Length: 295
Ligand SMILES: *[C@@H]1O[C@H](CO)[C@@H](O)[C@H](O)[C@H]1NC(C)=O
Ligand SMILES: *[C@@H]1O[C@H](CO)[C@@H](O)[C@H](O)[C@H]1NC(C)=O
Ligand SMILES: *[C@@H]1O[C@H](CO)[C@@H](O)[C@H](O)[C@H]1NC(C)=O
Ligand SMILES: *[C@@H]1O[C@H](CO)[C@@H](O)[C@H](O)[C@H]1NC(C)=O
Ligand SMILES: *[C@@H]1O[C@H](CO)[C@@H](O)[C@H](O)[C@H]1NC(C)=O
Ligand SMILES: *[C@@H]1O[C@H](CO)[C@@H](O)[C@H](O)[C@H]1NC(C)=O
Image: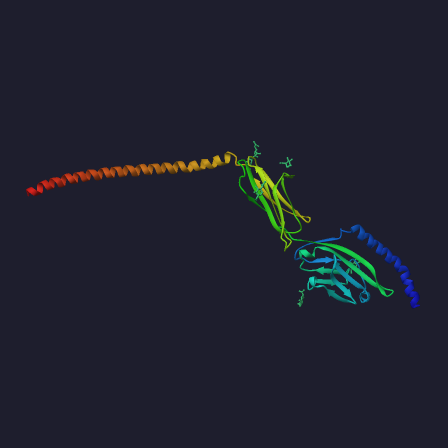
């Protein structure tokens, strides 16, 4: 009875299971490289094994999660073991697709994670399921900054666009009206310790016309950009300023000149008056002197 039951069900099930496996295998092969999880540094990522097992089965199966060739987590005899690099930041949910959740993501967590399910069969463990998930950990670049570097030649202006602290490897381009421009001195560097990138690029343009440049930085499916507007310093603009300047300079200088003239005139007349007064005083004193000895 027990025997027939055991045989009865599996006779139907292997078919179903085989079908399921084929579907999964098909999915895996079709989607290999497509099952991708993209997250930013410090976020959490959930990687699904895409396979469910019952709680009683959990005691017998072996579940391995590994990244490239290193171990991440294993469930054996219902016990969970987490390897040191993932310790205290990796949890597993055996009730839902045997997924793992990695918290506080680091750039070094980038890679392909594989989940392997083994079941005991005839005294040994046989591979029952295998799924790979590609985890891409990004670090967001801040909005680039554009700095004016002055004039390398009389009619030309040089600007530089730069941004740093992002991941993965960025690509920078300069655009004007949707068209890519030639840039100069594009530099890309990577911090060996943090793995974060820095990118910068220079652009020379003709100052004699108006421009609106976009510095576009693309990385891992994301973009950040900054716009730089240049308004041709056309004649009307400075002449308007000059007019204003003259409108101030003329009255001010006119006032200044009249003040100076007035002061000079006053001084001259004062000095003249003083000299005249002095002369008269001298004359008077001389007369007094002339008078006094006689007295
Ligand atoms: C596993 O179970 C979860 C819910 O518990 C369900 O959403 C999911 O589709 C199942 N996965 C598979 C591969 O059957
Ligand atoms: C994980 O946490 C435990 C207890 O807080 C601590 O003893 C252990 O060193 C931690 N492991 C890592 C790799 O940080
Ligand atoms: C960009 O550079 C290429 C090759 O150096 C040149 O053929 C092209 O004319 C340049 N384009 C502009 C807009 O300067
Ligand atoms: C590139 O940068 C170097 C140093 O920053 C500078 O000397 C050189 O003139 C630049 N070249 C161009 C084509 O802008
Ligand atoms: C800048 O543009 C003006 C007019 O469009 C042109 O005469 C001049 O040759 C250009 N200068 C450079 C350096 O391209
Ligand atoms: C350049 O921009 C200024 C200010 O927006 C505008 O007045 C001027 O007409 C523009 N010049 C050209 C040639 O488009």
